[in-house]
Image (cartoon, rainbow, N blue to C red; front, side):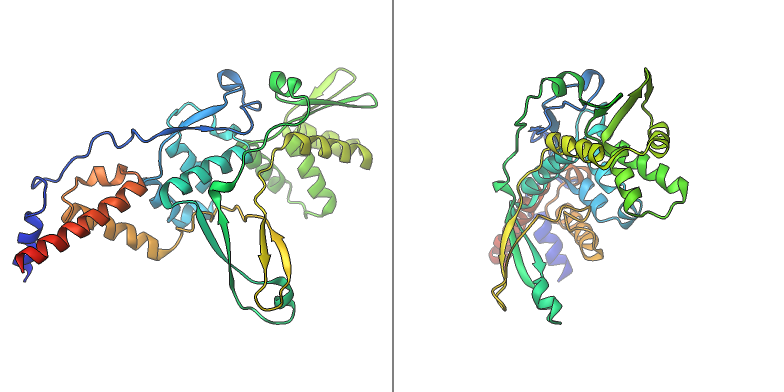
Length: 332
């Protein structure tokens, strides 16, 4: 029986060493950045789009490896792999730009339909935990644009706010600043209460503070200034409101109607590090089987399989399956 299977395999198109597929990276595309690159520095200032390659086995392997989730580096690892310009400052990508790239990757690999189990919170309060499906169409998300005058933002990457004799520069923040703030706060060994949460928020959005011609621009000095100079609630809200004006958000709300109690609510898309949903032992095993299947039956070179865009690999699996069925019917 095994000899018959080997004969069937050898009857499939391709050389004994496996077919090497060319131009697998040609499907890379330019992805528009909602921020228009206003918050980048250096030569990348005001870069409106970046070239990104489609999701492949390489990124899927990352997305199914627990350690990258445990140390909170999974998003950065994926972005480093798919952005073709290796000099691009990934650490400066703000949240909406990151999400836009990740949604583009997900749509290209698996399509725009996205479903999650959801439990009505009213039913949950009554002790009922029946799961229902909540569905999104990722292709329906519309990129937002700035509404207010953005000239200062475009030229400088921040908005200037004056409160009394203090000048604040408010900006948006990327991956690297998020990591730096978390590291700094952890080093303080403080119990995070409401006041500290506000301070962390202000640390994120303040680029610098200037008073009496002295500027404070690094995380430590800004934190110390905020501790030494208790700003008013009004000033704090002013800074946070200005940040909200420059922090673009994509409308992702989906209407949910409970099938049990008819409760209605709007649910935001839960964008987390588990967004792709590949972080399971089952998917890791699936990847191994797919590579073996295409290498053995599809006669495709191992490296070509790893580089092949996910959507194309799935199509090749389908074609290989059809070839096997055709040959088996002929031989039998």
